[in-house]
Image (cartoon, rainbow, N blue to C red; front, side, top):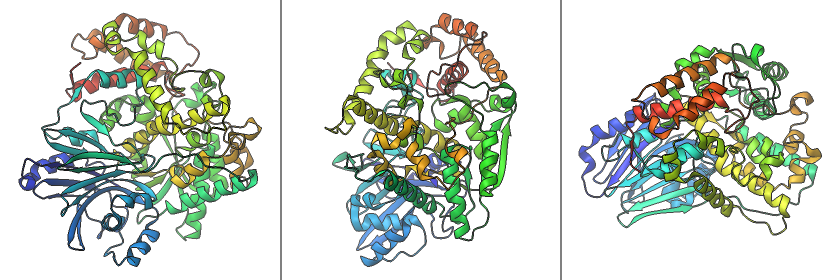
Amino acid sequence: MCGITGYVDWNADLRQKNALLETMGSTLACRGPDAEGVWSTKHAAFAHRRLIVIDPEGGAQPMSRQVRQNTYTIVYNGELYNMGEIRQQLESAGLTPQTRSDTELLLLAYAQWGAECVEKLNGIFAFAIWDKANQSLFVARDRLGVKPLFYAERDGMLVFGSEIKAILAHPSIPAEVDAEGLAELFFVGPARTPGHAVFRGLCDLRPGHYLMHSRLGTTISQYWKLENRPHVDDLVTTANTVRELLQDAVTRQLVSDVPVVTLLSGGLDSSAVTAFAAQGMKEQNRGTLSTYSVDFIGNDEHFEANAFQTSRDAPWVKRVSTFLGTDHHDVIFDTPELIEHQTRPMLARDLPGQADIDISLYLFCKEIKKSATVALSGEAADEIFGGYPWFHREDALSAHTFPWSLQLKERLNIFSKELASALVPEEYVAYRYKEALKEVPENPDDDDYHKRIREISYLNITRFLPTLLERKDRMSMAAGLEVRVPFCDHNLVEYVWNIPWEQKSFGSTPKAILRKAVEGVLPDDVIYRKKSPYPSTHNPLYLEAVRERMKAILSDSQSPILPLLDVKQVEEVIESSYVKSVHRPWFGQIMGVAQMFDYLIQINEWLKEYKVKVVF
């Protein structure tokens, strides 16, 4: 897993630009602490930072190979999980790899099949390839968007990078935000509309897409999307198929020349991944699987159950670890540590994010990195199997907006009337919502209820899941840790997408088909435990800390966020936060009042740190 960046400029000779390349690459040092490299030709230049996972000697990048009188050069961030199949197909075509690295396999795959190579890949990836003979750049991103890829076109150039900071390191790309970027930040965030990167002129290459750039211009093509197909399997066959697909995905993703661990919360998703990983490690004679969990000092004292968090994870972590015989490690943080590192996640994201759950995930990954380089996680199960409350709550199903962000009116109260007037937030969010619904593949057999469930499922996979994948990528890579997500295996996602809702949630049980699929693999009490989201701190000291920092921002006339806020309204929210109230998240399940303060603090620091110019 690595960091990549580079650019193409038809109006300059880039062979003398290595110093700039090194600067751009250095911004990604956390993603690739083990090695670095730059490469340039007249009109194209690449930089790479490497985190060594497979073939330390043979996987150095940027990598060039000559194939049939043409030369190709690649920078690549990701892992291929079907290396054996790709290698066999290449050798049958007369191309023999010189190394064990998936980087070379990917490069040769493009030389052999061109853009169609992405359809043959099983993995997580973002990569760029320069075709010398055709003077063209090919850039692609994996189907679910596990690995990031941003780009910008300006002044005859195309600049790309794993993270926004690498692109902003180019002197021709200014840090600016316009009206659309502010709307994304304030009214959609911390989610983002696919393809948008908040900064003016920057784009996010959408999952399942590739980009071709040459002197003729830039074209973007979609190579993968969710499609409706008949599902003919009965309940037992469906559960068995889900089990086989998940087990296959986990086993494939154990490939590594460095230690592999799993993140274990004690919930269904991470426990299922851990169970199959432990079995795979045993079958491969790789010893006992190590598992890691995160919690906070004081959570046992301050935790109060609500509709979104029904129970603590800690007892269940111990239950699963003991049952599977893993070498378990509890990582426990205190609230002062969260406050100390409050803005670090924003610097990793290059954008404001998800408050204390970002901070704790970053610190968690830093701790894991001391003993391992690769971890498997349970993200995506709720999105593809329908586990979230908004799949089952009438208020969310009947809402005409994104179900994880139902409090738009409450959001609007805290922003300046001038900002709201200029951005027309309700119209903007409604437009983005309708835009998303237009993408949903229709099934003429759906009644209104099943059509709505299909819409919610699609929104979760294409709009909400990216927020989790982005968080996991930035927080883990900021610590030099690679995290893999077996539930994002496209074979599993495609199959589950077409399972009828009555099978997915038979007996009115969320994720019932997944629970049935792992019967006998995990204890029944773990399998049928009610979902609890990623742990956040319940210590009131966190609310106190972010509240005081928010008050300090409001009292500082130089705070760049002030013109964007209705200060009086924010002060009223601050005063009301002294009174204990019912948990009502403004985003997702666990981002409440404290996290809203944290988000505003991050915006203020983002405007200062990145010297963002507002240009609307």
